[in-house]
Length: 141
Image (cartoon, rainbow, N blue to C red):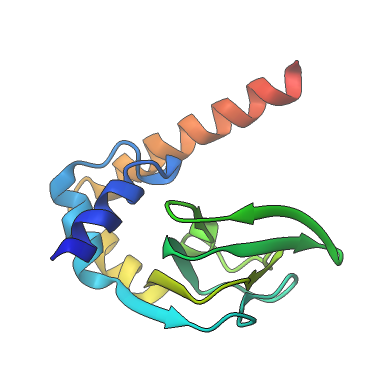
């Protein structure tokens, strides 16, 4: 249960899920899987089709694009949410730098929530609109 509480707190910070209620996020948490990976594990590969979304509960990962480090992710960071919405290639590689505990939500589980819960898709769209608005304001400056 503690893992679900931590996951829900992290989900509330993900722009795509920002308009969702705690009840919606509890449903997401029930469908997600707790995963532990060793240091050195490649979590996603740039250019490959994504199939899941990740939230880091413990540990650190490095993010590379075209072989160059662009970021370090730690507890509370989330990545891969766009893979829940489409089958586009990943835009970066993410590798565990330390042993990690992750919560992983797959496309199939996510699609089931969207199909079963009236209004969930509308909340996701509101969250994505906020994310796009934020990205647009950064490109205008």
